Amino acid sequence: MSGKIQSDQLEGLTAQLAAQQKQIARLEAQLEQVVERPEPGLNQTTSRRRMLRRAALGAAAGVTALSAATVLTGPQSAQAAQGVFTGSFSGDSAVTGQNTSASNFSNGVFGFTTATSGFTRGVFGRTESAGGYGVQGFNAGTTGTAPGVFGSSASPDGSGVYGLSDGKFGRGVQGDCTGDDGIGVRGNGTKTAIGVAGFSQDFYGLYGDSVTSIGGYFGGGQANIVFASVGADPRTISKFHATGELYHQNDGSLWYCVAGGQPGTWRKVNGPTSSGAMHVIDPVRLVDTRIAKGASKPVADNTTLSIQAGGVAGIPAGVTAIFGAIGIINPSNPGGVPFATLFSANLNTPPVTANLVYPGGISTSTTFAVNLGTGGGATSNKFKVFLRRITDFTIDIQGYYL
Image 1 (cartoon, helix red, strand yellow):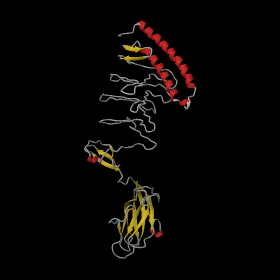
Image 2 (tube, one colour):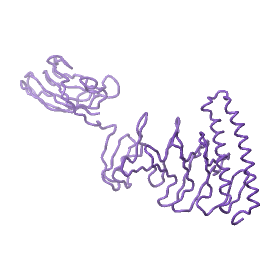
Image 3 (cartoon, helix red, strand yellow):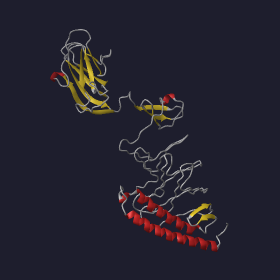
Image 4 (cartoon, rainbow, N blue to C red):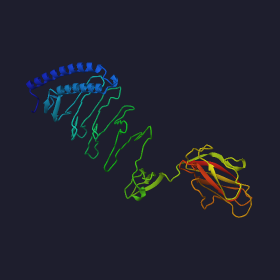
C-alpha cells in the first residue's frame, strides 16, 4: 500500500488500538494485584518477576503509542492489534516509541525474542544516513540509573547490545554523555563476567581518548589492570611497534617501547630477574660489631656471617636488594690480602669476588649493592658477609630496591 492509509482502514486500526489500550489497562490492574502479593522466596521490592512485568507493561504502552503515531507516516506492513510494524520508511524515524510514565522500568520500545539459535534480535535497527543511528535510545530521567539503551541476553554466547559498523571510521556502538560525572557507555559484570570487552582482528581492541582529560581510567578492588602475556622478548619478534607500547613478556617481564619500528627500541621496565625500583632513604646503621648491633665480631678468619636486612631498621620486608656502605675498623695484621665479600643469602658459598680489600691495621670503607635472599625460607630478607681476616665492621644502608 503506498501513500496515506485510506480513512476506512485508519478508522479500523484506531478502533483496534483503542481496544488494545483497554485490554492493557485491564492487564495492568490484574498484574498490579499479583505484584502486590509477595512471591514465596523473593523480596517484594527486588523481585525479578515484578521488574519484568512492569517493563513489559511499559513496553506495551510505548509500542501502542507508536502504532498510533506512525500509522500515517509512510509505507508500513502493520499488525495493528499488536502494535508491531515491519517494513521501511524514508522519513526521520521508521519507528519511534515514547513512554511518558514516570514509574520504574517503563520503556519506550521493548524487544524480546525466545529463539535459541540463529541471529534473531529483539530489536534491530538500520540506517543509511551519514549521521543517523540504527538504534538510538534516550532517557530524560534525572534520577536513578536511567539508561538510554538497555540490553540483556540470557544466552551463553549472546550479546545484550550488539553493534556492527562496516565504515572506515564507523562505530558499532557509540555512547555520548554531556552531563557531569556521566558515562557514555558502561558495562557491568557480576561474578566472573566481564563488564566491557574489546576485540579487534588487526587494530585496537579497546580505544579511549579525551580532548582535555584522561583517555582511560581503571580502578579495581583487586588491581587496576592486568596485562596478559603476549609472547617472547619483543626485541626478537619481527613486528612493527609504535612508541608508547607496553609489552608483557611470557616470563613476567614488562617492556616499554621508546621508539617505534620493526621491532622498535625497547626498555625493560621490570621483571622477575630485575631488582625493582630504587628507593633512597636517610642513612641508617644496620650493623656495628663493636656493640654487637646486627652481628657480632668474628672470632676466626674466613668467617661468613648471615645478616637480616628486610623488615628491620625501617627497611620493608620483601625488598629484593639493598645498597649502602661497609666500613672495616681496626683490622688485625696477620699478613696476606684480607678482603670482604657481600652476597645473597641464597648462596651457600661466597663468590670468588671482593667488595673491599683491607690491609692490616688500616680502617677503610666502600659502597656496595647486594641482593637479598628470596623464596620465603630461612634465607629470605637476608644477605651474607665473608671476612678473610678478623675485624670489626659497620654497614650503613642508604636505600633498597622493591
